Each structure stands twice: as structure tokens, then as C-alpha cells.
Amino acid sequence: MTISVDPDRCYGSGDCAYRVPSVFTVADGFGAVVPGREEADDDPALREAVREALEACPSRAITSRGGDGA
Image (cartoon, rainbow, N blue to C red; front, side, top):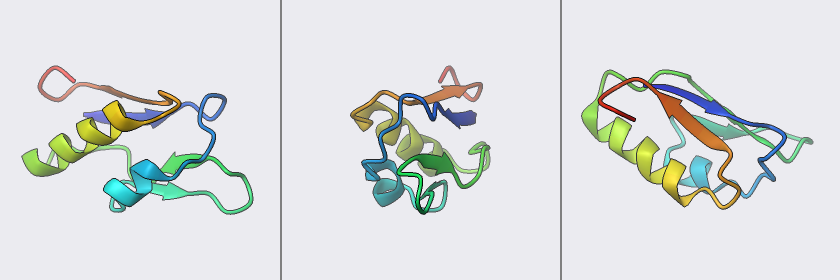
């Protein structure tokens, strides 16, 4: 699964970083959330956590490709 964040849509709520801090981080001074790592293929629990963060994103700025249909 390849994860990306659209910086034009993200308004920096930080919910994804709270949910999956090993993948998402908040960029200081920008108010945007950026991926801390772009791949989440190694762990099914991590893929599921990323999917939950994607679904919970209030600005719908997170997208994913690959993996098992994500």
C-alpha cells in the first residue's frame, strides 16, 4: 500500500498522526500532515490502522494505492 497526503486538502487536524504515528507526522509551521513513511505493506495491522486513518480524515486528504485493494 502506497500512502499519500494531498497538501492542498489537508488542514492539519493531526488525527492521522495521533492514530498512526509510525506513518504520519505533522509538519511544524505548515499545519499540514505529511507521510512519515509511504509504504505500509509489511504488517496487516498497520495497513488496517492506515485505512482507518484514511476513512477518519476530516479533509479527505489521505489516499492509498496497492496492497489488498486499498
